[in-house]
Image (tube, rainbow, N blue to C red; front, top):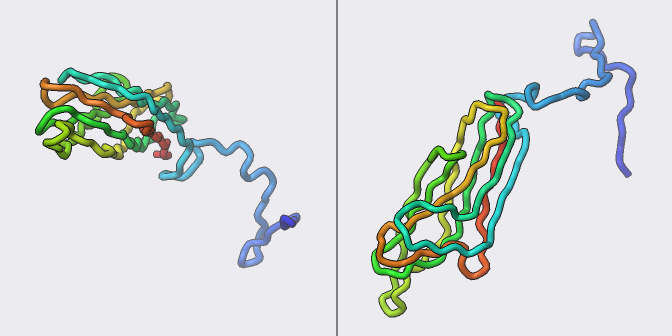
Length: 172
């Protein structure tokens, strides 16, 4: 059974006044939340396997959009990009995080190499980035990837793995 406390008034500690409680939380907005409060969380994912044979960055299919409630808000972006394989010795995959068309950060993932199978196996590539988009318009974050060498192909989200991107709006 849930408990409720019902009172008409709360008196101040020194007994000299009362604290009004009516509608204290009604009308609360993101703008009235304390700095550092999480205002909203959005998550995107993809399990679609992608393959690239180029050293030019291409989309991974992983993206999510968020509309900040204030221009002072920060967006904490967390990425867990599942790797796959790269079919050449000494190779790796380059991953970058973008807001729209602006590159925010780049990651390099060097692969472990198996001489027998001629395949480099990749694990997950993860990062966090705290962004200040300074807008109340919708913002899209996405990842792109490229081969670090133009000698073979690389794959992401191989074998039914799923990659995630999580966006958290933090009150500024």
